[in-house]
Image 1 (cartoon, rainbow, N blue to C red):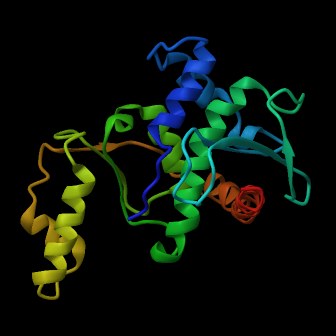
Image 2: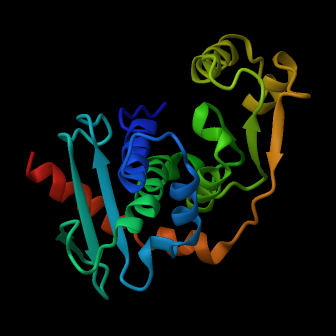
Length: 220
């Protein structure tokens, strides 16, 4: 299990700055997220937003923004630089969080996970779910938990995994889940078009993303 401190908290902080208030309205954030170009456009951008000290990576609190040159070498910039617009933060924070997951999970999934399951409050936000799905890309579908959305879904998953390890009797994990958990009426399949070009575009910046993390960690 990958555990992060700065998930919804960091996204809400960006949302509030874009709204110039503490309003919980996501409309402006979602509009900027869905209309801003992938990775900020031709001059690719990566942002790291840690209101709290982070677990993955073991980084201090702070905000770091980078642009990538033609060779995908990162250059640190500040929020007032001409190359960085406020709306870039809406796109960059969601992409950054998903790229971190992809970087860590890729060796375990041989590239793409079989399925993606979204739980928790952010699972209701289809714009956020769409971008994360584009970065990670599933082989066989994207699903949203519609029952018990915030009621310990990750703890439940850990418990099922432990039960599978104890008495799975040679079954694959997903087969075991189907025997122990009735999903009918509890999962909504989300229609997100799979795009290999977009997935490859995100894959092309993974090495640069790891370099940016190293730059942050060197200045702890």
